[in-house]
Image (cartoon, rainbow, N blue to C red; front, side, top):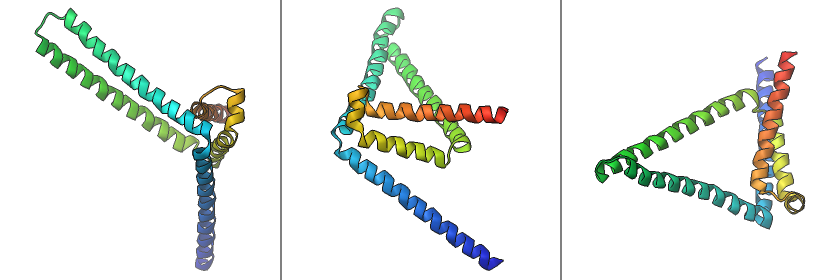
Length: 170
């Protein structure tokens, strides 16, 4: 019995190693292809510049709020500056806290409900299709490829959640 158990564990470890090797090969070849694809590089740059621009605009909005606060509250500017700084710290801490909480809850749900081979297949196939067919996709759909990839992943999660919910109900 112990010999069979050792043999089973050895075969399982060999299979897991082979699966991990195939996964790494697929991810690396897709990543290398993405690095040579002009459409993928340009869309990546545009995607992250857009995110950065949104963050900078949000900071500017809050900075403009300080000027309004100075006009509304008839107190010395140093106290207004302190109150504004405390308010900004509170907003940042709140955003980080709720962002972390949301990501943690999503991660717990995902690992419990959808972290399996099907999710991995969806991720790899959609990534490979987007990378290898970036130019034809851009010709049909003028959308940022990273944004499109995120939309596909979110749709896949939502569809799986709906299907799993309906299967459990019946």
